Amino acid sequence: MRSTQRQRNAARRAFTLVELLVVVAMVGVLAALAMVGYRKYMNAAGVAEPKAVIQGIRGAQESYKAEMLEYLPVSSSLSNWYPSATLGDHKTAWSNPSHADFANWRMLNVTTDGAVRFGYASVAGVGTQLEQATGTTYTWGGLPMPPLNDPQFAPNGPWYVIQAAGDRDEDTTLALLLTASTMSGVYWENDTE
Image (tube, rainbow, N blue to C red; front, side, top):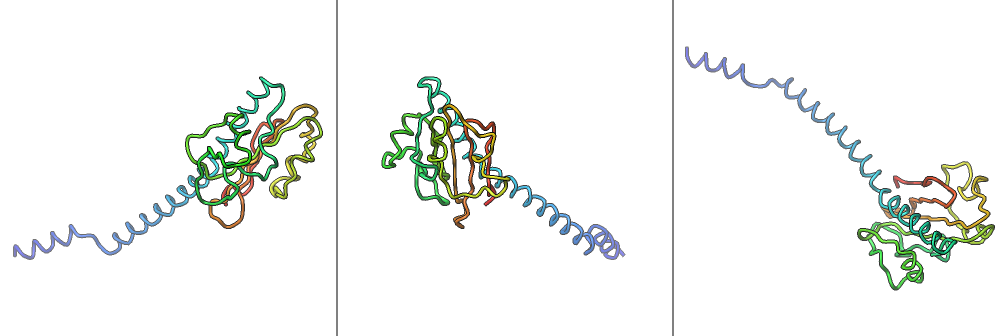
């Protein structure tokens, strides 16, 4: 009699197959939600570095202009990436004395907390020199027109343009970020590439 009673108590304490399947389904749903959140977090983190560095370059350009009354033309073109001409999923130390524009970057006095994944370029000038200095082949598909062709960007005095590019997954599609002295924000394209 006692063994039958124990078997009944044991049967009451055990999980049924349906209960186990419900728990497994709930864990699966929670895991799927966690993966979606993780991907969003990683995509947002991917462009955090260039946005921070662009703001640092912007501040350095404004400091330079306050002292010299013009912006510093740091790069020879918007596609002459500093600190490394090769873009990919690798980090490069910010200080690169072998780069052709190293002296200009050093004069601008931009620093980073460590190595960077993106390449940066900053051109500057006065008045209508913009067309000669910013030749680039990128399309900026998310905008009605390339940002520098926007009628609001019509500099009469000193101006600068800063561009960042990176290829985090090495598929030859670049994540591009751009800002200028006449823009309040940062335009970006392919930020989740």
